[in-house]
Amino acid sequence: MTIDLTRLTIAGARDALARGEFTAVELTDAALAAAERARPLNSLITETPELARKQAAASDARRAEGRAGKLDGIPLAVKDLYCTEGVLTTAGSHILDNFVPPYESTVTAQLFAEGAVMVGKANLDQFGMGGSNENSHFGPAVNPWRRRGDTTRLVPGGSSGGSAAAVAAGIALGSTATDTGGSIRQPAAFNGVTGLKPTYGRCSRWGIIAFASSLDQAGPIARDVRDCAIMLGAMAGHDPKDSTSVDRPVPDYEAGLEDGIKGLRIGVPREYRVDGMPAEIEKLWADGIAWARDAGAEIVDISLPHTKHALATYYIVAPAEASSNLARYDGVRYGLRVPGNDLNELYENTRAEGFGAEVRRRILIGTYVLSAGYYDAYYLKAQKVRTLLLRDFEQAFGRVDAILAPTTPGAAYGIGEKSNDPVAMYLGDVFTVPLNLAGLPGMSLPAGLSAEGLPLGLQVIGRAFDEGTVLKVGRALEKAAAFTGRPDVWW
Amino acid sequence: MSLDNATVAKIARLARLKIDEAALAPMAAELNQILEFVEELGAVNTDGVPPLTSVVATQLKMRDDVVTDGGYPEKVLANAPAAEQGFYTVPKVVE
Image (tube, rainbow over all chains, first blue to last red):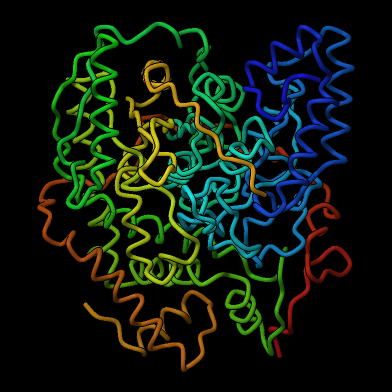
């Protein structure tokens, strides 16, 4: 075989499968071999080779009968926050020890219905809480990229670090991920791949282990904008089992991709020019603005005045919802149980041992801000500021069709470099968190390399349920950026 | 607003998280660092601003209040750390 089956895009593999250039079994075997070779990256918590081969064989049989779906035979990694029937699901935490869901999440069920093949369950920060993957009970996934001339192991970002690393390392053509405060876009940026956080309500959250229910949203990480469009088309849609999933038609996201952005108004928010922003991020952003202008877009200076309060708002709302959602882990119905002399001790022992340090920290903060006497000062106040953040975006979208910003204030860093300072870690979410608070869609695409040779991402933000414009702008920038970088295989 | 050890112990109790006496002070320091970070919100003028309850203006769907799922206790109990005769089991809670 002359082509490298692990480096194809989903669209490329789909078309080649349709032409009969190779089989789903061959494509899957290549992915599984890549997964085995890439074990030092620790991007998969559980490999599922037997299931994958079975699904691939079934895919080839379907194709022979002319019944191939939109993702038939495409090897994907599934973030280990999605419940998968009969396959160990960990949320990256010790507290779900040996949990094998008897049901399938709606999003993975939809992907499988379109013929997708699952190569394994991707590593993550416990319950999605973290931006570096260092909060995984199973050890951090490792970024396939390294600094030029340096063998330091770098974080893949988080929380969907394993999902992004698996795509960058050739283990899967695409991954499912989730984004509560940047957990799709930041790891996509750190790994030189493309990730899309859809509008809140676009994809069903049913069967996805909950972190912060008003912020969590499922979305794809893949090699390019088109592949994100293809995956989103299969993942999105109303689900009677998630009352917050919105019942509106799922457009053909691939159809409008090449329409161009001539005449579109693209906003550049002045508040995103934060103090101490590295010059290379400034440059990346300026490049993006120039590319959009060259493609015929009109650049508009906009203001999102409450941006500076987004992180503080997020770090009240997210822990509050987490403390409530994570109350279900009681050592009684599933997962870890640590005995105690009475029921309360059983709960307390189980939860102390089962949750990692960052999860315990967030549960405590969340419990505090929701507790009697503090609810108004913290949680209610944060929800009011959230209204102001949403109004900022609504006003901006009266004047522009999309917003352009960096994804992160810097490139991937070394494992252990920031892990002792939770607040420093939180600051990395500065450009991603506002969208979650406002429920808006956003995508990160690789647009350049840092001085050290690491990928950097640009972020496109859109109106609610206007993923079509986000993808179209992303595609125009992708063409202009012509990013072809990929990590050298050192593992 | 600064948390002392007794408050941390109380929150931990509410959250059903065992925390050793020796861990209270370091945890209080970590939590205070986060609370200090979010304190700035106090300065934002939110007079007359309603709290956000939903980011997407949508009408929740209603459905008939009927059982739509169930009838497989063995699947429900399959992941239980301890189960007997179709029930979860826990340490004795009544004397």
